[in-house]
Image (cartoon, rainbow, N blue to C red; front, side):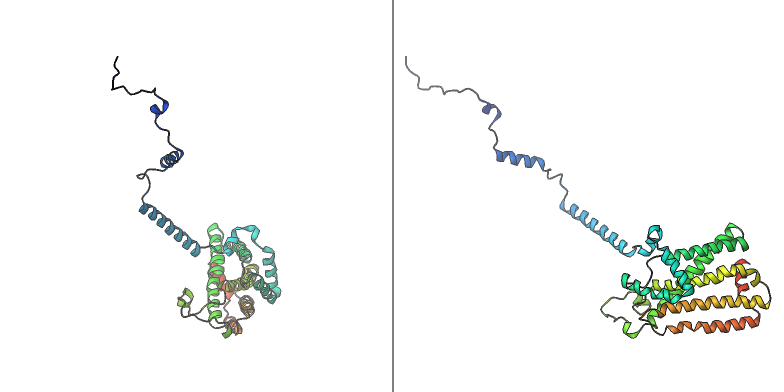
Length: 315
């Protein structure tokens, strides 16, 4: 039997590799897992969109920082709503000494300057107590001479907001300008830097402030304590006598206002005279001579200033 030259190739049986395919290597597994975990190119945000988003966030952050720096609530006003931070004991001590020994109160400022590096108070207790006294006085005045809720509210508005706070803002600003412009010692004046941009002080007031405005307001508050005692407390009990049209009521009423206003400027003088970088503060006592002249003229003319002021409030 002859052998055939075209013998058929040997067919081996099928294996699992023939069915599944060649198993990928470990490096191929790594590449596949990384590729599957990454989002597709179409799903990624574009670079320009990301840059715009970051720029928008940076602008918002700058705006918030500017607002926080410009409208930051001072610590003085923050302490008004935190009762535990108020020092009422020191405030009452200052009030008692302002009546008997005002110089002692201003001598204590040196310790405050050394410990807190500022002359003005950082505690609003004194102002809050004085506003409370004025409010109570307005209520009693309203009950006696302006009955009704509306009349009492008007008296509180006039006595606390207008007479004390608004008047204090004006007086403190005047004292602040005079102190920095005329009472400041030559060696205490700051050196002006021409390269520095103009501020609101140098633009409108033409000086760099050394004296703190808040200290000037503190001086007003200290001096106004005597105004409250004389014209809100004592006058309340003396008003029936002061409103009589005779020489006794005229002399008593004018003398009461003379003492109150004179003592106000004496306390103010002590306040500015206590600062070591001010001089010529004795000029603050000049209004006392004017008050004496006014008292003489009004008394001789039969004009009772206490009667005039009470009529302006209640008539």
